[in-house]
Amino acid sequence: MASKKSNIATFLALLMPMLVAGSEAGRIAIYWGQNGNEGTLADTCATGNYEYVILAFLASFGNGQKPMINLAGHCDPYSNGCTALSSDIKSCQAKGIKVLLSMGGGAGGYSLVSSEDARQLATYIWNNFLGGKSTSRPLGEAVLDGVDFDIESGTGQHWDELARYLSSYSKRGKKVHLTAAPQCPFPDQWVGGALKTGLFDYVWVQFYNNPPCQFNPLNATSFQESWKIWTSSIPATKIFLGLPAAPDAAGTGFVPVSDLISKVLPKIKGSKKYGGVMLWSKYYDDESGYSSSIKSHV
Image (cartoon, rainbow, N blue to C red; front, side, top):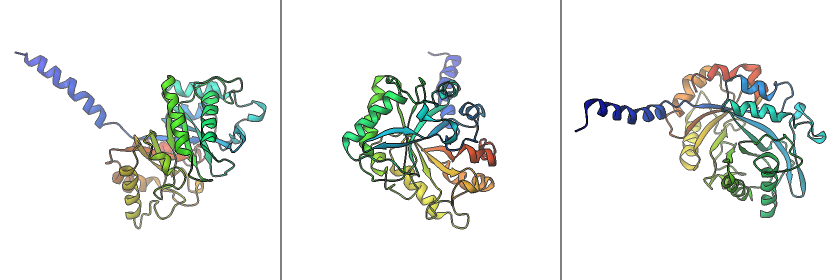
């Protein structure tokens, strides 16, 4: 017969993982790269506010174009000037922060016109940003943690194929995390099909610049319904609430800190798929201090 001590030890061993799982707080993801005045990537990670940093953007690709990153005033990829970011990326990863490359953005200049286009882009990303080999890696030798789909132009075709091609590289060693930033009207017209693959780890839904589904303090019903649809309909690991980090970061959808803490987070944190908050962007977060204000509540 087991002793009382061993029974207690067994009980505690079973209880601890449950407590840890139940107390897992939400996390903050931030976009970095579209304003040269937002500080360095290393400084961004050193704040301790973010668990995911998304490099914006791989802005040109597809339909015969050579893929090119655009990191605004941070560096010039045309003169191979962004390779110095490799040490910053590694310093972020050493802190346990996942660093991802975002494809797309609001400016356009990209598309996928065929299955072969998707395959070629996946191969390029693998060799130049992930675990593959290339003599011209734009960000140097650092191996990014994954790829973000922030697709806001073109058609909704072939993104699912791109997701499958990219995900297949996980078999070669380090997992390739896939994330996406769809608009909150469901389903998203560009990546809605790709999200159905079930290959996405984190989906940070843009609840801004979309008045019908973004938070409105006078009538929160449509926001809550939209959140419920996203968390119940998408086979992703976690769903994040995407917000502007300051009033001038987006046309509409900014949620004051007090409203987020008292009215929004209590409504969504009960979802099993709640992952945290995504903010656009580091520059505006510096302006407002938004992430610092919400971190202990997320």
